Image 1 (cartoon, rainbow, N blue to C red):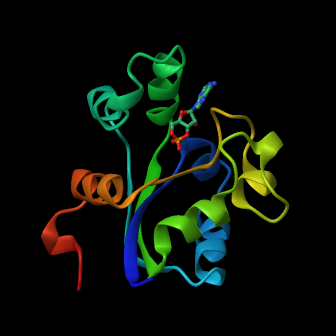
Image 2 (cartoon, rainbow, N blue to C red):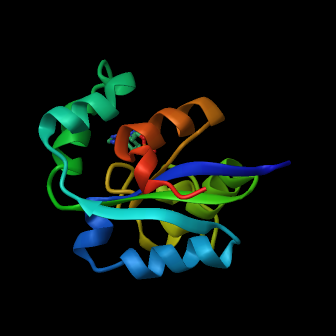
Length: 140
Ligand code: CMP
């Protein structure tokens, strides 16, 4: 597997509890390099657009309201098999199902307030990185 890039969000429940550094340390300990990072606050329109694939889900409104409730930290992570590795480090979407030592097991509060988002495939990783970062912000 070649070097890959994936997209990550440190969500409002985690930034609010000052867990940005602790979560970044988990990525780095797993061999993922943080090659781009910024703290931003989403507008409702931006949250709805980013999570557009979930627009028909019953939790869509709750998800978007949560994602704009506090600043988030968006990052690009790079490494061998970065997409799968990041998903491993994050743990299952629902913290109740997450393995010991994962970010969601240690920090997530619920399935909604689950501390991190990570891309699920190469196509979504490319789309999600381009949604938040310009070419100028991404060093090769
Ligand atoms: P994420 O990886 O950001 O992608 C979609 C998000 O929807 C997911 O993480 C969860 O935070 C959220 N989500 C999924 N299922 C539910 C649910 N049943 N109730 C509230 N939020 C959910």
